[in-house]
Length: 189
Image (cartoon, rainbow, N blue to C red; front, top):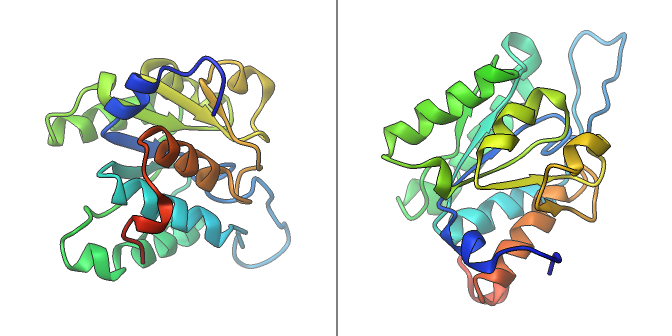
C-alpha cells in the first residue's frame, strides 16, 4: 500500500483516465520507420480489465492523433472486444485523440458530464507536463515511476514499474487491494 493514501478516497473513484504514451505504452519512439511502433505490456491490459471489473469506467486521453494514434486505437478496440465488454458486464473503454494540456482536462470534463460524473470521483494517470492540468484537477492522481519528477511529485500514487511495462497494472493491483478484493475472484478476460 502506498503511504499517505486516503483509502476512502480510492474507494470512491468511479472514473479513471489514462494517458497513452508513457503510461499504457513506453515513452520510446523508433524513428526512421514508415509507422510509429509502440511497446506495451499485456500486464497493463489486464490492469485495465481489473479496473473495469471493480466497476470503474475508463478512458484514454492522448495527444496522439491521425496515424500516430493507430496503436492506441488498436489496443482500445482489442479491450472493447473482450467477452465481458461484449456481454455488457463492463463498459467500453473510450478513446479521445489529439488532446494535450488543457484540452485533456476539457475532454475529461466533457466525458464525465456524459455520465453525470464528478471530478471528485475521478482519477487519472499521466507522465509528463502535458498531463498536469488533468492530474492537478482530479481527486486521485497517479504516475508511472518513469514519469517526470515534477509529475510524480503531484501524485498520490507512483507505480513501481515504468510506463508500458506494468505501471497500469501496479495501479490496478493497488485499487484491488484497497477495495479488499481477491484478484483471483474478480472476473477477467
